[in-house]
Length: 312
Image (tube, rainbow, N blue to C red; front, side, top):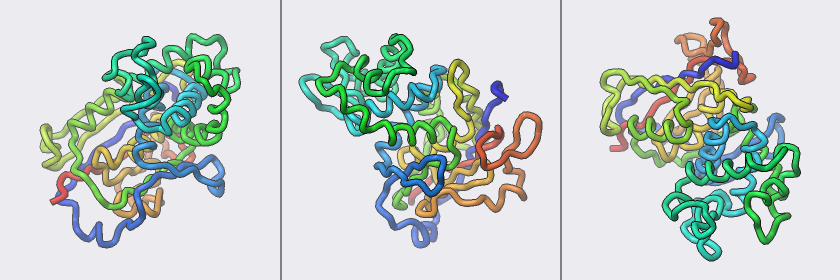
């Protein structure tokens, strides 16, 4: 099972119908993440914050790092920048982790690139002996050398919620309300972002008519997300599904379907819902043995999604 892959199929759509807007979400755009208990209090954050957390998590798991490393990284970014990619800070501090070019973290352009910044954080984190066993605030402080070393601890609970969802350990735990203001999705852009965030784990196969240079066109894209390996225990299916929802507003994702559940931009107020089509159209998740998946998130198989191809 650990060598299995999660595969997603991108189904192109035509004009984003006006009826979707008329019947869809009216809430202010936001994302919410919860723990394993579905009745637990969720943590709410902006779509931009969720997207940045998704990048941090993808970079960590794709390096084969355990969920604890992802939790530490997300908590650190929550304290340093509130998960915002800042173009300012104390002295020359910049980006998600407020890294300082003058202190050897990289150029201004590099430290404001979320993928680079997350990687630079992990590079130093893994040099700390037994960092996984340290209290979170001590591990973060060993990397950051902050003037306020105890402040990281207050973010641990919410960072744990995010890492649990974004590594795929907790199925259906992250959902975003898009506010029904879609942008056209570009398959080429999605491919670039997958390659950057997942460091070669994602394999993309395009079908004819999927649109190579713009968001126009229709057809299918198939993306296989391989197991991360190393110490990572991520579930590729839910890891990928949550990443897509977290970045839906940025990438023009209108629908994600995985493991018997469906998220739709036009009905994003409803969060993840039972996918009534999963049993009837071959979209049910299957693992390598061919057995049906379940909503527990332990299956491997096909994640289906649609991109908005036009907003006209």
